[in-house]
Length: 385
Image (cartoon, rainbow, N blue to C red):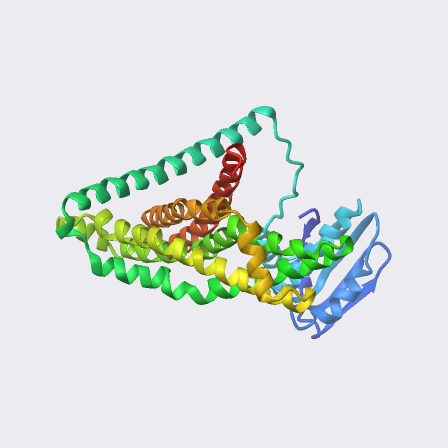
């Protein structure tokens, strides 16, 4: 504390004093009388906040009681005066009160002043290197899980009696059948939005009929399978991570290895294979519902009847758009399944790790799906499809 403490010259000067608190301004000092405690603090703080001076002397010979709240008030007064370039001298301070002030001062935490963070070129290169190493480690781990899946799938192709059909049907129901409502609703609404926005823009040029081409190409080529994969990534990648991660937390995977059961065959193959089967079917549902929603909105907004919509769709929409959309489905399925299983195997022994890996799996799967879709777009553009 910046305050100067002057001990009591004669202990007999410390009288009993009256209860309460008051300040008296003397010739060269301010005299404090009564108790400075949590009870008198509401009265004392406004009076003490008005104190000031280049060299304030506070005579504490009349102080009858001091607790931690009062000591804190004295320390705050000293800190305020020091900040203003002034000083505080505590006169006639008893040994007990001085010891209490020392303890309270030591207990007050020091707030570090935030400094300006200046990063050198070496710091930036270090951060970049760490990001690259982490990304490479993640990619290597995902590729390892993909390799294990392909190896176990080849083994089960040669030994079909060891294939767990019940697990495949269960996971196909979880990731496929149960996802149909949300996928269908999403695709229907996307078709409605495309038709409405397309009608608003194309009406300005008298080209309302081309809204059919807009809906068909957008849904069949890109949005149908892409948005389906994003929804499945949110549902399924988190589900795979949570299920496998919970088993790892409970050491069930170690128990499986002890019983000579291959975790990859039991956990990875049925899940990823179920996605490979069901994601194209979900994409088909999304395409149908997206076209249906677009046709309904085109009928309502533009007066294009369903028969005219279907005729225009069959005449002017090439089969290549359908092929482009469905070629992406197996790749998206493998990406989602592999990332979900890999994240599940990275779970540690606590619930925090499980939650972190689950959310990370969703983000990584969605990002990987969108990145793969961008690569597909470039690839098919180069093939003029």
